[in-house]
Image: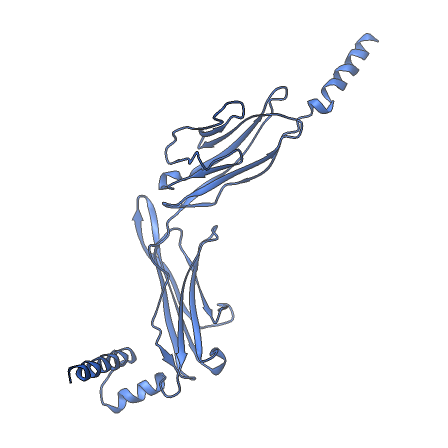
Length: 289
C-alpha cells in the first residue's frame, strides 16, 4: 500500500504544471539565399510558457557563432566563425543581423533554445542558406525604336549577365505579363556562357520578343515594354522598363519606304542613326551661321 501511494505521489509531482516541458519553438526564418556583399537576418521565435530561458545559441555547420545569455550584464556574445560577421549592436534575443555576406557564408544555420532548471529542455531548428550573386547591371532591353505605327512588327531583346542562380526572364507589355504558353511572341530563351567566379558558375540569360502591333497595344499614344528577372527561391526582382510611342507616318513602314526611295540599303537601325546625325549637322550649321 505504501509503494502504491509513493507511486501516485511520484506521478502527480512530475505531471504537475511546473514540470511540464512547455518550451516551444514557434518559428525560425533562415533565408534560402543570402546576397553576396549584402546584409541578412536570422530569426528564431519561441514560447517559454512555464520555463525560464537559459540561452539562445546560433550555429553554422555545427560551430557556435552567437549566444544570448539573459543572466549576464552583456547578454550577447559573438564567436569567430568563417564566413559569419555578426552585428552585435543590431542583434537581439530573437534576431541575428549578419553583415557582408561572402561566398563562405553558405552553410547550415541552426537556432538552439535551452530552458533553465528544472527542465533543461533544448529545442533547435535549422536550414541551409545559399549565396546569390546579382549582376552589376541589368536586365537590359535593346532593339526598341522610339516610335512605331500600327501594323509594324515589334521586336526586342532582353539580357542579364553573370548571375547566380540563373535568372528567369519574363516580358510585360503595358504591365501585363506575356503568357508564353498561349503566345508565340517569345521567340527564344537561352541560358549559357557560364563563367566561374570563386567556384560558382555565373549564368548569362537572354530572351526575345516579337509581335505585330495593333491599336489595342497603345495607351495614350505610348506602349510600355518591361523585362523582369526573377530567381528561384528569392523574392528579388530586377527589371528594365522602356516606353515607346506611336506616331502616324513615322513608323517602321515609313522608315522602310524612305530607305528604298533614296536608293540605299539602310537597315532601320542605320536609317535612324542617319536621321539623328543629319539633324545634328543641321543644328551645328545654323549655330555657325
